[in-house]
Length: 247
Image 1 (cartoon, rainbow, N blue to C red):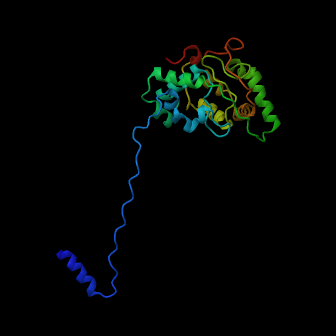
Image 2: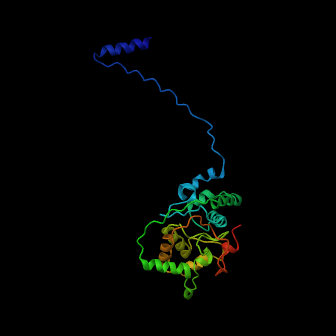
Image 3: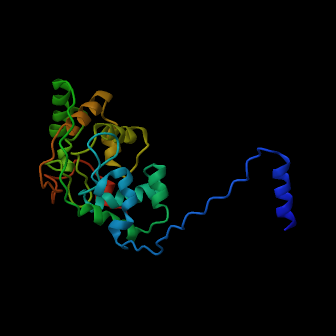
C-alpha cells in the first residue's frame, strides 16, 4: 500500500510524466509434441550419408562426391573399412565410421549395393575430341608399351564393375576420378597390398589422367546396368582388394 502511494506521489510530482507501461500478457504456451517416433530402420539410420552422397546415395554427376548406390557390396565394404582404418583419408568419413563394427559396415554396404536407381545424363563438357579419343583408347585397350592394362580388364567390358569388389567407373564426376587417380599416385589413397590401382596410376602421366577421367565422365550409364559377374579374362596383375577382401 505504501509503495502504491509513493508511486502515485512521484507521478504527481512531475506533471506530464507518462504513466508506467503495463506489461503485455505472455503468449499462450505452444504445445510441444514429445516422443515423436522415427522408424528404426537401416535406411533411416543412414540418412546422414545423404547429406554428401545425395538422395538415396545417387550423387550428382557434377562436382566431387561419388555415387554409392548400386556399387558392389564388397567394394563398398572395403572402402568403409579403409576410411575407418586410415587407408583412405577423409575426416568426415573417419568420424562417422570410427566406432562402427565390421558387421555394421557390411550392413551399410549391402543397403547401398541393393539400390537400383536411374543415372542422370552426363553434363555437357567442351572436351577436345583428341582428348576423348586418348581416354577411350586407354580405357578400352590400355597401353601395352607401358604395361598399362585396359580399365575394362578389371572393371568389366561395360565398366559397370565386377562382383563382389570391383567398382563401376561410369556415372562419376570428372573431378572425383582425377582426385582418386591422383591420390593413388601420391600415396594419399591406399588399398590392401598388393595395391594394384596405385601401381597402375603411377604409370599414368597428367595428360593420361585427364583424358581417362574426361572420357569416363562423358559416358551415359545404360538403364538397369549392374555389376558383372566375372571379369572378361584373368586379372592383369595381383590386386589385394579383390584377392583378399578386407576382413
